[in-house]
Length: 373
Image (cartoon, rainbow, N blue to C red):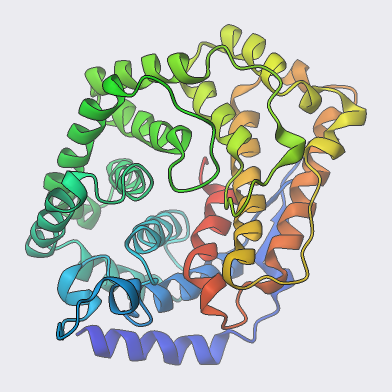
């Protein structure tokens, strides 16, 4: 079934990828981009092709021992594609999100087949065994594990019979990961801001979304306490100096995205003005959100495209939370212009058959525009 599904996806991709990329977005009332139906199809094809390909994969290139003849799908029967486990997980989130919001696109049947393959009870048992028995039970913590909680969160919010069944099958793995979050954060005394896989803000943010959906009050409280402990007293973030090294997310804006969820609106407004003051001064917004361009976009340099897409999703999240009068006198317009410029820059090299880029930036693109809808 996997081979047949992959060949079907490749055939669809080869006939439809010539579509003009300019049609993948449209403007909503305030000028921000959102996906068109054509855009949903475009990113669905990228994620389908990636999530159904088990080579190249870091298992084959890095983890497999000499003489081991297994493939990535033997080790991770659900999340074997996209070069690494965490990228496969967030591409599954992407496929779920697209199918929920755009149920009538031509790729809908292929998406449902791929998700049906991934979310079988037996496959998830094998995934759980690996996650819980590697790296002392902290395999891909916090980044990959937190994305799995986001997958569960997205399925929970979808009134679809298949989604309900998939979620039930996923529960042993998501329950385990929620348990890991419950145990780890209370013993971590301090945490730095980060835009990489070790980002505590990203991990806590997705764990919080999960806790709210599943009414896990204990986990919710632990995340609230951790966010205040790590970031509650921070001021004047180094936002204009980002990205750091090979960060693929915005260290500062990930923190703003977390804190908007865990603080009351009144407390958040006070905190964010002190943490990112330049975002609320019209003449400083462009400097804070400047695009630091690079001519090379593959390999680690593709991280900078993801970094800009992550900034968009965090800013979109903030716009859902901030009171409208905080962004008056042209400040919101500056945000929107910067967000759209970042999108245009990040999309220059996506969808050109470069695996370094496409294996993860499809899902980041979708999250940037509709992750918080």
